[in-house]
Amino acid sequence: TNIDTKQDQRRPKNKMYNNKNTATETMVNDYLVTHVRGEEVFKNHAETGSPFDRTAALKESSWRLERPGGHGPPKPFSRPAAALPDDPRYMSATGEYYHPRTLPGTQNFQRARQPLHPDAPGGAFNSLAKPILSAKPVSNPKAGALRRRSNPPNTEFRRFYERGDLPVAIEHSGAGNRIQWKVDIDKLDYHHYLPILVDGLREKEEPYRFLAIQGTFDMLEHGGGKILPVIPQLIIPFKTALNTRDAGIIVVVLKVLQQLVVSGEMIGEALVPYYRQLLPVLNLFKNANINTGDGIVYNQRKRVNLGDLIQETLELLEANGGEDAFINIKYMIPTYESCVLN
Picture 1 (tube, rainbow, N blue to C red):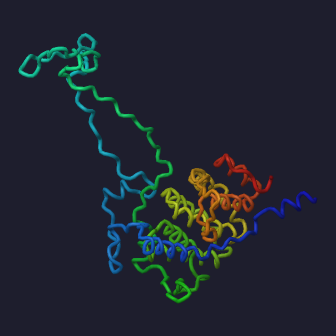
Picture 2 (picture 1 turned 60 degrees about the horizontal axis):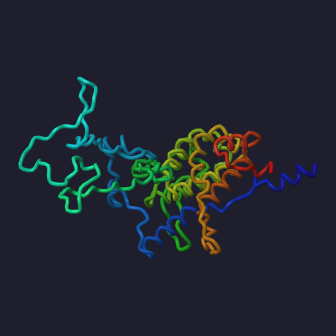
Picture 3 (picture 1 turned 90 degrees about the vertical axis):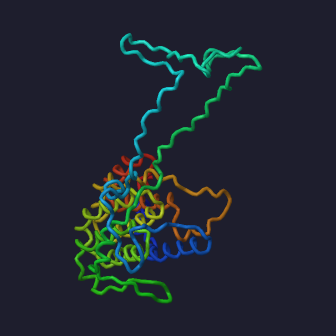
């Protein structure tokens, strides 16, 4: 019918986003912010060392507490403060509270016109009693749901790359860096290499980040039918990267997800059972838009606005996820509106 034809025309099923330059754009953007503006984007981990050293292994106390996406080491246990001299004490024998009496001495005596208790009103203008301090206003506690979480340097990609097990190297050229594959991509074992590269998406240090991002896009471009059987192995690396709640890492993961959905047939339908692992973090940052008023955002082509990128990804997942995609997205993100039914 005409209605079905119009709905098919509105579906972004075959919409392709230019995500293949994500690795270069991320590296260039960090360089501009660091060297031109003078701001520090990311401080390298202490375990990384120099470019000629291997990353030092995390201590047992560190990797148990600072897991990827964790809350970091727990705060030290603080014992309750000792009772003040004027606070009532509890007598277990009678089950009543009582005020302890201080023994008389050179300093413990009743001064003229001094109230019996610091909180009691009274006293003249020439009273020797200490002024009563007003209580400081207590600010509302923050849940920290959007706060960046720990991201230790213990990715599988870093371990395999430093060991020399990955057939990749950076080829420097005037037009921009790219990956030099030592083996034909079509001959690679996708069950082994693709999960390792996806696990490196949460890297923020070079050259690990560039190799992981660009290598993932190269494998998705040449994968075809080899990608669909590997989908279950990619969920945990995706979830770990999203749980860091780092805006830069989430942007990279979303662009990889967009490329993954359109890389082959039935991939969108295969991702539907895993929405419960992928979408909770997107629900938190769905409204993370930049309010510029009547200003102009000149970096729209870089597509780094988190709110818009999440909306594009959800529409792409719905359009390629089959008939059950919308209801599963709606279950995890209640504020999402369908781009197919509406």
